[in-house]
Structure formats: structure tokens, C-alpha cells
Image (cartoon, rainbow, N blue to C red; front, side, top):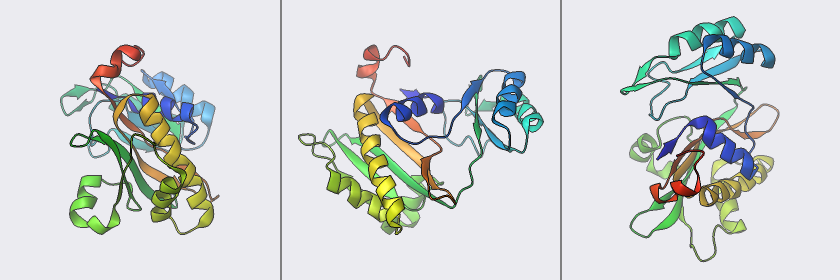
Length: 222
């Protein structure tokens, strides 16, 4: 079962992954109030269990709180792939230097976790796999040992040349695996994992699907 972005981010935060702050709004007034509290530009993002939110007009940059109100008013009630948007996530807009992709999913053939990472983030990973297969690095995790530190480094080192970025990304890759396991997930991904002009590495989007057999352990998302 897919969970909302804000729910996935809560699980990321619990695992220690750096995620920008954000709050959920169900009305345009709430979105405006949240944006006012943050000050500066924000993103208003539809919370719906469907891909392609951006292409559908469900993700908008807002220069100020009044613009956040306007975009939230348009997004709430919007139909995205047959689903009605009832919530939006309001989060500060980030200055982005680069975008990468980090994902882990259960390989049904082996029933083990498999990582996929790419320095080509911010786009559909299937599209990257089709057009630039060399831009993806894969790693199957041995369930007997979990993700080992040198494996996390090997994945992170494919994403960045800067040593400081690699160090941060190595930690995030390990934390993502922890979130994946602790949540009973069948898939989780960060797309994009960004670097900022200040040298930080952050997860500004989050996706997670939880195995149906694990939902009884997690009533908060069922």
C-alpha cells in the first residue's frame, strides 16, 4: 500500500534522514498560514497516491503566502489519475545545486532488498533506465547481513565526486535502508536527493509502499 509523501517523510525523519520541514493543510487558509509561518518561498504539493503529480499541476512553487493560498485552492479538489486531492504538503522551497535518485525495493525473484541509485535524479527512474542505463548502479542486499557500511559508501560514491557529499549520502543510504526495513516496506525512494549551495544533502521528496502483510503492525498508515 502506498502512503503519502508526508507520512513517508515522517518515517525518514525517524531514521535520521535530513528532510526539510513541512506541514499538511486541508484548506487554502491553512496553507496560507503555514507558508506565512515559514516565510519566503514554499512548495505546495498534492498528497495523493499517484505518480505524475507535477505534470498534473499538483506541485507548485509559491513566492509567498498569498500565492500558496492561491495554488492550494486550485490543487485541493483536483483530480489526479482518478484520485481527488484532499491534502497538500506545504514545505519551504530549497535552493538546488544537483538532484540524485536513491531507491530500494524488494526483488520478488529473490525476496531481498535491491538498491538503485543514479546521479540523474528528479525524473522517472524507469526513463533513466531506458535512456541511460549506465547512469544507474544496483546492489542486492544480503538479508543475512543487511546493508554494510562499505556498500552504502559504494552506492553514495556513484552519486557524487565531492567527498563531503559522499560522506553525507553514505549515511543517508544507510538510514534509508533502516527506514525501509523498520517500515516493512516493499519500496521506498528519494527522488530527488538534492545538494544545496551550502553543501548539504537532503531528501526533498519521499515515496514509500508498505507490504500489505505489515499493515496490521502500522495502524497509523493503514
